[in-house]
Image (cartoon, rainbow, N blue to C red; front, side):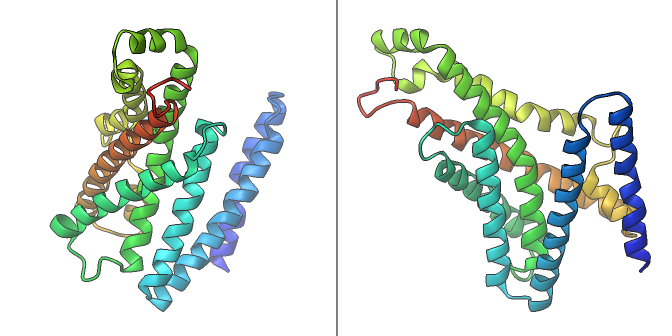
Length: 252
């Protein structure tokens, strides 16, 4: 009952936000209300799913939860990049899977070394953290690259006519997109611990974890996010570039 009461009181924060929006005539009241309802519902469903996964302790169930998370993240990321590029969902999903899998394999082998790699208590939270952060970087990079390619067809075709390969013709656009997608993560890393306490570390501290232990876990998570985000952005931008050229190296 105390938890339900605290949750109900926490909704007062959003009520204040909605009231402020109405007071300033921002027109965001419905958006805030919808975001509140969806976030509560989605988190409650996720909480029950994770609770079942922990109780059952079945690797296959944990993998199913992770699979759903990956598919939803791929669709959301695709929608933010472009809905006109064919096969973009499979490209994004494959990029997310490879980036998350390689990062978790390295972390499992050399850092955390859990008893079971597929333990839901380990697999689900870390996958969710990586996906949540990588999605933003991938969406920024993908959208930047698509806009650049659509805005500069003549320049790209000029490079192609002079003998450049598709990779060479769009190299500068892809490089700028990768930098734009990774920059928010790098900026977070540069100020972390100075002006901010990261969410993961704050949650551990609120849960009673010793500060130095929470710090060690946060360092591991931060480095995982940076590596996974970079790999995912590299793969997604490469896939987008492939979709913009025909087999004869012509811009579509």
